[in-house]
Each structure stands twice: as structure tokens, then as C-alpha cells.
Length: 130
Picture 1 (cartoon, rainbow, N blue to C red):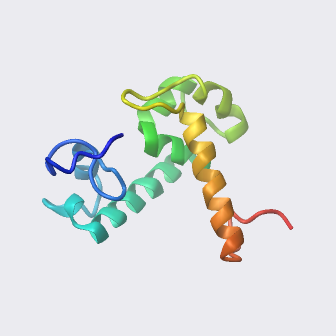
Picture 2 (picture 1 turned 60 degrees about the vertical axis):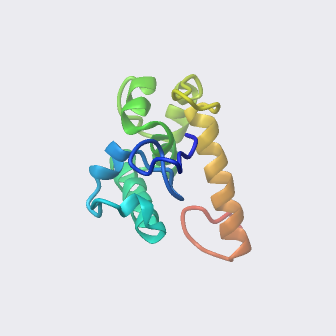
């Protein structure tokens, strides 16, 4: 979603591009949190963690962050259990006002995370296989 810095009370806003309604449903939300860069990052992390808790996959959580958990469930007709099971269904849905499908966005995020993990020599779910 495109940033709307002219109106901090409406539209996707801040580093994590959080919508007002989404931000208000997160544990760390308070009035003005989206406009504070550090708080915006924390809210974005809370949302991604919440999505991971639902889908148990970072790729599917990334797709949910982009288009909303309900969009993932709608595209897949339920809660996907793995990325291979979800990828084809999520490749058919483009959220309103966006250009990438849920699957394209998730694949991009995953590729960036893998590249960053490699550069920083990090272990974990995004580390490349040896």
C-alpha cells in the first residue's frame, strides 16, 4: 500500500506501512504509535508475529502481513498448513491497491530475508542450507 504521510490518521503509514484498524488491534498500540518510527517497527513486528502464530510459516505470515490474514484464508479457502500447499492459491490473489499477488510478495520478502541472513552469517529459519 502506498504511504499517506499527509494524513497520519488514515491509510498505511510509517516504516511498516500499518493501516489504522490493523494497528489498533495490536498489543502495543496507542494513539500516535504509528507516527513514532520505533513504535511503528514494534507494531509491525507484533503483526508479523501474530500472523506467524496463525499460519506457522514465515512465508505465509508475510503474505498475511501484505494482504491481511483474512485474504490468505479467503484465497486458500481456509488456513494453509504449509507454503507448498498455499503458494498456488496465494498466487491468484492481488490485494486491492497493490500490484503483487500474495505469493509474489511473500517470495520477495523471503528472498530478502535469506540474503540478509547470509550477509550477516545468521542461523535460523532464513539461513540458507550449507
